[in-house]
Image 1 (tube, rainbow, N blue to C red):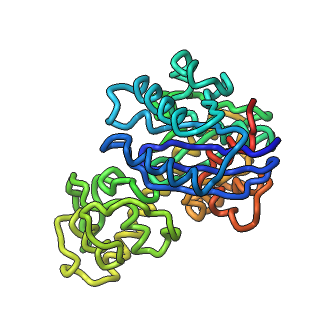
Image 2 (cartoon, rainbow, N blue to C red; image 1 turned 135 degrees about the horizontal axis):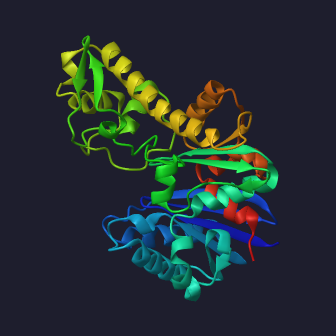
Length: 338
């Protein structure tokens, strides 16, 4: 099988996983937000190539084509494919059900290539489990994908279709906007409407609660200030038109718990919707992403079994957590498509 590196080009991160004869030995992630253009992505590729070393094959998937740097998703696929082909040797592009295609043929498969990283994970799980519910809670979004009788049975494929089916939830452990998590929140015994400004993110919520995994938050804060609990309290308070000094620390911790619960309920609702459409009443939840503890609690509430994505792969012990955080890249390296 040789060496295969799977690459996942996201809107804000570049992720890569190296497999040697099918065993994942190294996983990395770089911040590379595309909103300001593609130069940071080029820099991330340059650093990643040095760290990951040479490979017999490089397999690329993406979600970054949705970034507003590009005028359309089709243009995004074209430009990201061209960039990846220029940065890597022996490249193929993952096109979901169409398999892997050559970069020069990617324009014929734009719709299959766009945001297909979830399909790589689900396809690998389908090889390992007859029935499962795959939940990947990342920094920005959450995937909820059903596998029945060893097949991926998602009702949607594109982002638009998956949003409508509950298979894509736009909430993440880091970059999710607090104002998108709820329209109001309890404070001082009253329901207080939120200010519709990006004053705080879910990273602030989970930082206050101590549930933000180490190394998960690679992006700048909403106000450009420190990544401390005190600064997170100030940002969260601002969402309700307040300062952190207007209440004690316990009040802001209680508020953070409420937002974390609201996020969990949104994902659990989506999972229930997806489960209700097929034979998944007793399926095992396969968890990936940086929100494993959240997914474990959702599985408990749904009465489902629970396993993590890395348990399905041959993984070096020191990169197990990273494999879950970068599941799509690891899936591509492990699937080793031709």
